[in-house]
Image (tube, rainbow over all chains, first blue to last red):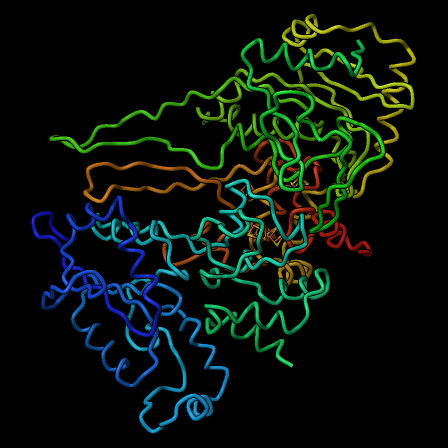
Length: 261
Length: 367
Ligand code: SF4
Ligand code: SF4
Ligand code: SF4
Ligand code: SF4
C-alpha cells in the first residue's frame, strides 16, 4: 500500500483509441483536484507537457494494439509500471477497430492508401491483456468516470474496487427503469452485458448497446434466439448488435460469427 | 360498507390529511408502477395489462375501471426494502475512527391498491426481516407505520397463479381496508372491508353506506370468476420433496441453456430479500461508508468464496433460485417463498416460467 507522504506516481498511456476514456479523467471536474492531490500525475500528454520519468506506481492504459511498434511499446510501459490498469473497450477488447479482425486488412490497406508500402500494421486489433499482464481491466466505451475514480480510490486505500461483473439488468432494476425488452419489445443487450454505466440506455427508452462488454457469464445464444424468434430481429442485425465496441470480446465474437451467413 | 366512485377521493384525502404519503399504481413509461398518488385521477383509469412470459403491454379497456389490471414490475418491496441504502458512515479520528449514524427517517406510507398476493409477499418479508433472530432495523422502521388499502382482483393476469399458492385473488387479512371494485353499466362502487381499527377510523371520514347481501354476493362472485382466469397454475403438493429428490434432474440443464443469469427474476420478486454490501472510501481515506444493495443468487459473486464461485454454472444458479423459493424457504421460514404474482415470468427477458419448470420436473408434458 502506498504511504500517505509520498504520492504515488500515475501515468496515462495511449494506444489505438479515440482519447475518450482518458478524457474522462479530466472530466472528473469536482474530483480532479482531489485526485491531483492524492497522486502525482507524472505522465499524461493529454493534460500536461510535464513528463516525470518512470517507474510509475499506476499506469492507466487506453487503446488497443494495432501496430508492431505499439506491441513493443506496451512491453516498455509494463516494465515501467507497478500496477497496470487498462481502461475502455479498446484496451480491454480491441475496440471498434477490432472490426478489422473479421476482414482482410491487406485489402483495406490497398484500397485506402495511395502508398500502401508505408503502412505498417498488424492483422488484428487486440486488447492489452493479449500482450502483457494486466492488473485490472476497467470496461466501457467510454468508461464511466465514477468507476475510474473508484479504481484509483481503491488503489490509494489498498482495498478492492467495487466494480461488479454481473449484468446491466441488476442496475436497471435497482434504479426502477422499465424493461424496454419486455414492455416495448426493444432488443436490449443488457442481460449479457457487464454493469457499470448505470443502465443508461434503458433509462432513456433504448436497448443496451453492450458498451461494457460481456458480463461474467453471458448466455448470448439464448438472448439471440429470443431476439430472432420473438422480436423478429433479422440475422444481419444480430451480427451487427454483437459487433459493436466489444466485437472481439470472445463471447460476442462467437455469437456474431454464429449468425454470419 | 360501500363507497361510491365519486366519494372514493375522500379516502385518499383522509389519508393525506393524516400525514400519509400515499403510494399507488400509476402509468409510467408504458407500465403500471408504484409511485406517489395525489388524486384518484393519477390511477391507471381505463387501462389493463396483457402479460405472458417475457411480455408486457398496456392496453385500453372499454370502461373506466380504477383497478382493471394486475401487478407491474415494481412491488412494495422497493419501499420497505429499498434497492440501495447507506448503512453507516465513519470518519477517521486521532484514536481510530468514529461512526456517524445514518439517519433512517422514512415517510409514513399509505399503500393504495395492494393486491392479495402482495399482502402475502409483505407478510413473508415480515418473517424474513422481523420475525427471525436478526431484525432488520431499516425494514422495521419503514414497515411500522404503513397503512394498507388492499384491492381484490377483478381479473387475473396472464402470468398470475395466486390460487395455486393460496394467496388470492381475495385479501383475507393484513390490510387496514380492502376494496372490491363493482363495475357495471349503471354502477361504479367499491365494497370496503375493514381490517383494523385504523381502517375503521379512516373509513369514518368517507361517505359510505352499509353493504347489502347482494353486494356481498357480488364480491364472492368476482372472487370465483377471477380464480377461474388464472393465466398459470402450479401444483404445490409435495413440492419440497419433489425438488429435494430431483437435484440432478436433466431439466436443470435444459433451463440453464435458456437462462441469461441476468437476475431480473429475483429483482422483481416481491419476496426475494438478498443484498450485498459495498464499502467505499473517499480519496484521502478519511471517510468511509457501507452501502447495501439488492443482490441476487444469479450473480457469480453471490456464491464467491475463497478460490471462486460455488455456483459458477447457470444450472446451479437457476436451481438455487427455484429450490429456495419453493423448498428450502419452507425449512427456513415455514412458508413457500412464492406468492404466485407472476412477475418473474413476465419480466424474465426470455420468458422462463417457474410454473413450467415445476411441471417439467414433475414430468408433466410442457406446453
Ligand atoms: S431494459 Fe435491458 S438492461 Fe434493463 S432489465 Fe431489461 S433487458 Fe435488462
Ligand atoms: S417467484 Fe415469481 S411468481 Fe413467485 S412471488 Fe416471486 S416473482 Fe412472484
Ligand atoms: S431466490 Fe436467490 S435472491 Fe431470492 S432470496 Fe433466495 S437466494 Fe436470495
Ligand atoms: S430466469 Fe430469466 S430473469 Fe431469471 S436470471 Fe434467468 S433469464 Fe434472467
